[in-house]
Length: 163
Image 1 (cartoon, one colour):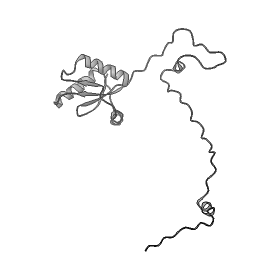
Image 2 (cartoon, rainbow, N blue to C red):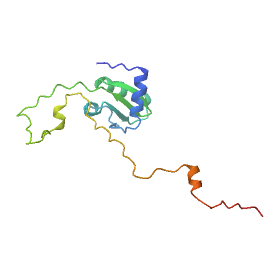
Image 3 (cartoon, rainbow, N blue to C red):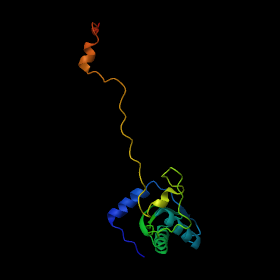
């Protein structure tokens, strides 16, 4: 499965990958089946990963990048020196089937016991709590600059003259 990315998609993915650390490091042994499995599991968990390739030969690094992207069914977002950025979207999950009796309610409470996410459909965004209303200030209102100067009374500013 070949994943095609537009230039805007590549730019956005590179920006998202900027702060990531390499999850897989390919050493002197090269691209082994163990590394391919590790890259596959990292892509399943994270979608976007960085891979560090050891070695100074640019052609070998580029060959490893294309081979790794092909075997992992991922898109090669880009290479930065010895780092590769790979992207593979997560597959849509199958609907969850919850086995066993339905969750019980406690007496007098509408809150269900158990997993809070069980009521949410797969793929739905998490529920966010609404922001608290702004508090009313208990401090007295501030006086304007003109009123503050009036309230000073007989105090006059001190003028200093140079010598």
